Length: 413
Image: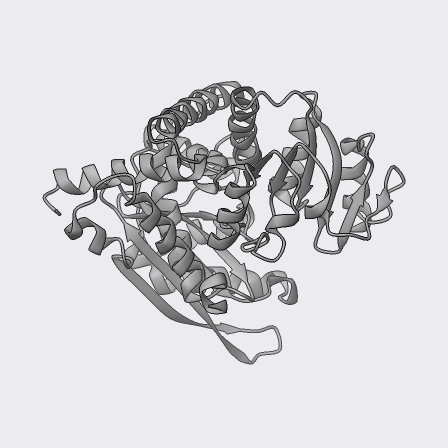
């Protein structure tokens, strides 16, 4: 039972099974959802600065391409494993479908702690990963992007390596690139910005008047979300990072907190707050933003959450068992496949700009993003009302409907 609680791909499959309680999915299609279409495991030999060769293990999961090329980030993390990568590639399939962009779902990862590598070792690892999988990539086949502990600099190295191997320029093969290499404006904070748009719509639908917010995870997505919310009349009362949590029930000065974090490397000991001794998830709030890693909310702590609304800015932060507890306590959850889809949406915009060799202003990107996210939320909400279910289930219903229809139209059923 413990394995089921924490195994990411098992969780992803359980979420799919719940959808089948509401809509009919042919057995021929359901069977194809039980595993990725392709799954690669590669060994990446890297010459370290001391001259020794160290071999790293990497993965690429290509889950489903019925609606378009595989799309999904690459994470560098010591806890990367096959089940996680498979689950993330399934979630990416639903994510691109729920916001209705013509892409499928994929994901990649390397088992490594990048903080232990020098810049040169990190570059050699990044290029080595592309060398191992480049034949499976391409703007019309599979398009990676940054994820946990990868960034535009790493995407630049990967793009350069792919183009060397392919013998041509192909800016659309990687998204999340530096602007100088064809990246899109607003991409750096697009996950949080997209999350804000759906959060604002959810707040209206649920008639939440008070706007006190707790943000678990003060990395790129969480910090950007806190900053955006604070500029839009929300009160951030507590935040956490990997080293601890802080709280100020009157509201944190997010701009000053960002400076403190950049200077000290942690949110702890911030002058405008108190270090929080208890669990941040158990503090009373109106809105809880989950922006850390997977399985943050489990059956052990779900019953202690006092929020009215949860926004999953991270991927898979709530286990299947915890989800049932939250639903029983009437706590609404905007799921990751909708809440954090702003990142892949702007990645898609980046691909479009690369294909046209014509680049948009930041204002243009944000207008297109807001329209996309608002439309997706409206579609999800309509299914919530139609099937009388929670927001997560309605988002999955919408996504699975779209993917299944593409599979039928291709004759895969």
